[in-house]
Length: 48
Image 1 (spheres, rainbow, N blue to C red):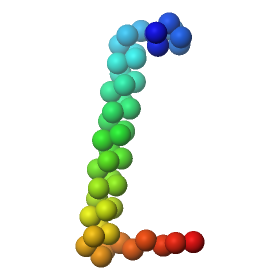
Image 2: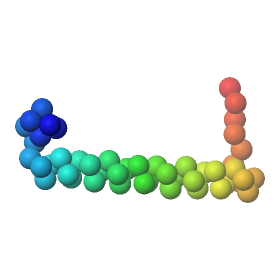
Image 3: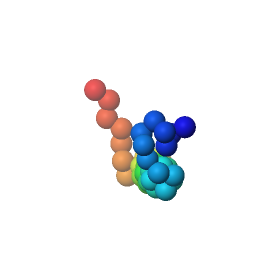
Image 4: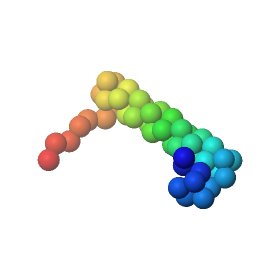
């Protein structure tokens, strides 16, 4: 379905999905690192 909507090849769609998954993994790693820093007292939350 996606290939017909945007006129992309299957490989382009697969590459886009891989890129999305990569970005998600990077975001998860970053947030996990931030949570760990908060637990260790190295980072504090600031409320507005």
